[in-house]
Structure formats: C-alpha cells, structure tokens
Length: 164
Image 1: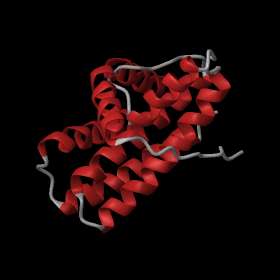
Image 2: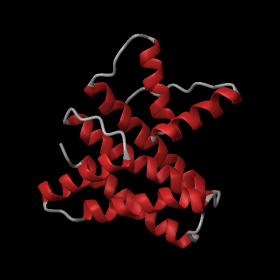
Image 3: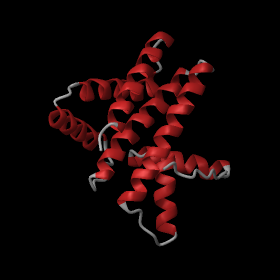
C-alpha cells in the first residue's frame, strides 16, 4: 500500500527553524515535522503509521536524490541518499516496534540485521550511506563517486525492503 503524501508550504522563517531543530535532534526535517504535527494534534504515531511514514519518505528522498544528481548537485544528492537509507533502516526498526532516533542506534540496528541475516553487506552499504551524510557537510566526493554510492544505496534499500 502506497502512502498518501501531502506537501505543506512553510514560511521561510519556519522552514529554517524546522531544519535547525531537525539538525539538533538528528532527525530529518520531514520526519520532525510529522512528529510535531502529531504532538500538536494530541495524537501519537503508532508503529504501523511509522512504517508507512518511513517508507514514503525513503522513496521520496531516493527520487529526489536522482533529480539532484541530474542537476549535478552532489551535496543535496548525498544528503537525500543518506536520508533514504536512514529511513529505510528506521522502517525495519518500526516494524519491530523500535524507534531509532540517533546515528548510534541506526548503526547498532544495522549491525544486528547483518548478524541475524549473515549478510555483511548491510554494514558495508550503510557505511556508504554514512559517508554520503558526511559529504553533505564536506562536499569532497566527485560525481563518479556519488554515482557509485547511489548504486550501493539502491542495493541497500532493496535488501532492506526484502526484510519482513
């Protein structure tokens, strides 16, 4: 089932504040916005809602990464690929009733998935995602490197989708 996606246009100041708060809390802006919206409405996201939410955002970020790569914006491509990866991992965690909020929690969970499955590619491919997150801040990767990383991220997301 595909999630319905609704866009909200924010005033520039509010958008900036959301991005800053998201960075402080180690969440993605879209992820934080949904959490704040639910809290503001006096509701809680149940695990099923989180699974759907994380899947929709992961797909959205992966599609946006491809668009940014076409525009040769390697910094935004890198961050969108990181976001798509992190959210794909969070989706599996949510399916298990976990809410993974920090880098350390993501890494621990990816290591657990690798141990459970016997597939070391999970850690290797997530390492690629993490290096893309770093590239967002340092902008040191060449286009060819980002293209190869994008292929690896697609492989990671496909592997994660195969986990029930």
